[in-house]
Image 1: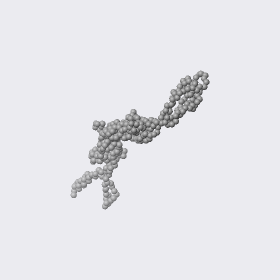
Image 2: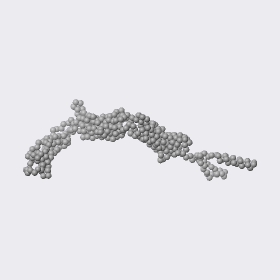
Image 3: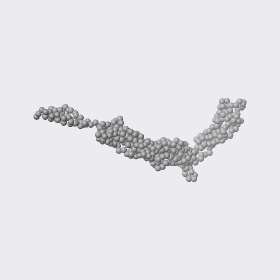
Image 4: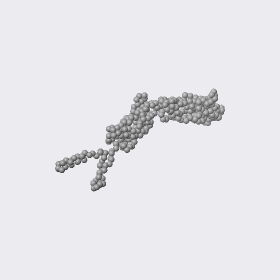
Length: 370
């Protein structure tokens, strides 16, 4: 063989060897292992996984109020190779309900080959419920096909409600109750109504407090909060049903006041109502006495005197007692004028009348007031 031919063949062999490519995903790793005195070469797979992240490109969505709903969007992004499709999994949370408050989301999105990102659309469903703002929270799930960016692994979209808050009010439309109705031969109840505005699709529980001089469960049938307005209804009555007892109590009151709760606001102008329960028990006629519990009054320093009235028997009703004034002291001149009557409040056994002397420049003997 000629020298020139031998050189040509040698060049061709080297040329073929240099154009043989090792796949980009394979990296040569030399090992000290020798086979027949020759160092061998092995290859291992060191494919770099895409790093995926998630972020809301439009974090605000809104129900439509009869128009086209305004969606929110979340973008999922990958790094490195875009040569093939990549399926990204995610979990769904938040106060909004998947498939009810927004169009159903599958829990995964595909970034197509050649693309570095894909969008997830959160499309609100316009309903008639007053829900307030609700959230949709998407969080990337781990996978062997990619690596999740720990700093950008979750995103939130807020769905604004277009119904507005439900407002509730309270009105005592029958404020007069009685322990006994002589015609019906039954206790006469009073009524309070709790009313809501807006949608009536679902039932609504409304909280209230109970106060007044009447005792819940003793003076009227027991009441408890909340009161529930049924689905399809805009109001619910609360019945104040008196209990006819034999105790002289006088008129007593039941006061209901709306309190805060979930799914409604309170009309501050109509948040309370009062029902008055009339008593049907008549107490015995009281006996009233009077005594001068402080029988000395002085002009100097206007040292006052005091008459005390006392009553016996039942004190369940208010009582007015009239009196006459006598003696040699002159009303309006020697002491401040008196009204001629004294009031006993419910439950009071005593009432007082105060005598206030007038300090004048007239020299007078001791004077009396009877």
